[in-house]
Image 1 (tube, rainbow, N blue to C red):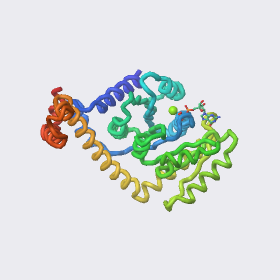
Image 2 (cartoon, rainbow, N blue to C red):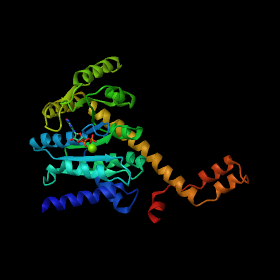
Image 3 (cartoon, rainbow, N blue to C red):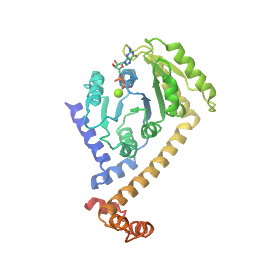
Image 4 (tube, rainbow, N blue to C red):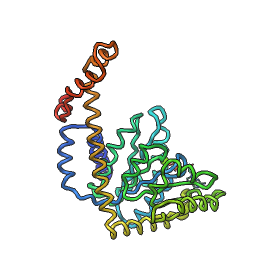
Length: 310
Ligand SMILES: Nc1nc2c(ncn2[C@@H]2O[C@H](COP(=O)(O)OP(=O)(O)O)[C@@H](O)[C@H]2O)c(=O)[nH]1
Ligand SMILES: [Mg+2]
């Protein structure tokens, strides 16, 4: 019973954080400001169907075996018309729903993927503050925004599968640059060796001095997941010892600041746009685009208070 109450409370706090602005959120913000960034955030990314959810589910088991609490954010790009993937994730991770030490949340993007780059880091921050030493963020590594979200993690795990060209796909998508650890999942399938060789060759060519480890897993039966967890724990230790963890976090805070500024300006512009006839006047030629733009920008009210009143 207790667990259910806690999970309900976390869900309410998350929706508060997701809302663009509200009075409660400012109280929450004040509280968050006093909390340490105490969690280790792991991004798990890869093509749809590569086995990320199955793997995350297994990782939960490994983490729980150490008795530490863990939260999962599954960022799902499915359209509002196909909630299937979200349900799938829930069902797959079901083994842990009764466990008070596990919190799982799917974030549907509802066709507004861009907004997630603003809300995901904030939700992650909230979960850290709510005493989850591990936060796993599952994203589909297919586009710029997903990669941006994944890049927000302390450590990034890129999942590929055996099969010709999969690692090349990962390279094209820009996943090579953000990977701290590679997982070849579905190691039970043919083509494992070729994929490992492909990956190694590609990493050989990368200018970075650190060579990401490659771990082979079969998420469906759990094989190799203990090795993945060990690799992850070791990497965490390295990041902490070298000071790289604090550097990454400082960079993340700056990136979040930049994105929030842009998001707030964007909202303010949209508000100003929707209440003006400037577009009409530009279209019919009664005002030059430059004059109209200057007028619009001059009329922008970016204060959060205004947002709250509306
Ligand atoms: N053969 C095999 N199938 C797997 C493995 N891991 C996941 N799958 C299957 O691949 C499908 C997609 O898995 P899912 O975890 O939903 O992938 P996601 O879209 O990346 O989250 C499911 O049918 C899984 O059962 C694996 O290691 N081996
Ligand atoms: Mg999934």
